[in-house]
Length: 358
Ligand code: FDA
Image 1 (cartoon, rainbow, N blue to C red):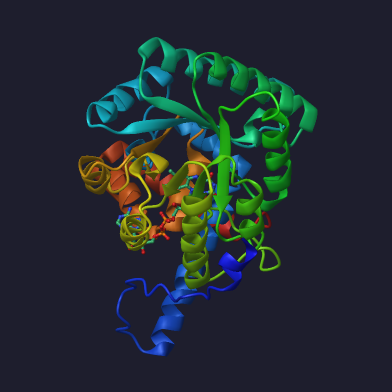
Image 2 (cartoon, rainbow, N blue to C red):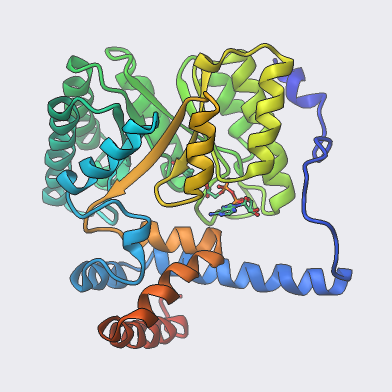
């Protein structure tokens, strides 16, 4: 098995990357600017003060385009529309920076409510949860009990629960939760983040699980993670191919058409049936492509984030793709009221840039 990876080198996939139209020097400059912008939004995503402030501002700065409502009933509307188009959903009750037990218990109650809602509405959907939201940073056993209650209830309704993967510090504890709970339940799976050096080992170790494979959304140090797009993309492909050939069900979670096209050809070449995998994208992104893939007969699943705690999620989306700033700009400059909020928020954000927190 190890040889599958060892025998393959980076960049041999000849992915359709954009042509080199800039000089090396300009490319370096653009790369550096992109990295600064990315780091800027990653820092913002980790700022608890702004997270709290955003909850008080309400649904502003364009977040409504990528967050499907502030409560589960609103989200259900979007889910039913997508289901009607042949698209299944995975629901994320947004929540971050949980540092006390009361907050974690509140999150558990809300997610149990999502389980009930999926069952009551009979929608084609499962749940994505973040261990930190259920108390991982407070106490491992407390978190385990909280997740167990959710998994148990979901299991009774035959609903799958995905453990989203967060930053490196939470990686092994999240795998431990999965292994512990899989002794009693089989309706669980998790995520492999391709930027981690250890992802190759992890995907082999956890191949019996349904896995979502992603590039990775957090800022991780050079000691543990690939830093360049080329290395991450190449590893992403390697891991997807490995799990398609050797693992249980594979969720290929990406908006990258190069990767999607590569997978389409790979499954044909290796006679992998469509029941063995699905494509996943985030709510609000590449909507036409989501529909097109579903219409082409591929299993397709849209990730549906909802809730008032949208700030960290939204900032990570801006970090990944600064073009998503269009969402902010449109929102800020189309309405006078939002313009005022935009100016205040903009000043606030810039102020934080130079503060000691960063
Ligand atoms: P990437 O952002 O690298 O873009 C590659 C190329 O695709 C771009 O250059 C562009 O050409 C095209 N493209 C991308 N977005 C586009 C758009 N909106 N419109 C037009 N073209 C576009 N991460 C994590 O750490 N833990 C997790 O649990 C999850 N879970 C998760 C679930 C789902 C359903 C998704 C889709 C993603 C995640 N992620 C995640 C996030 C993931 O790790 C990654 O950060 C983002 O998906 C961004 O990477 P992409 O592979 O989408 O393409």
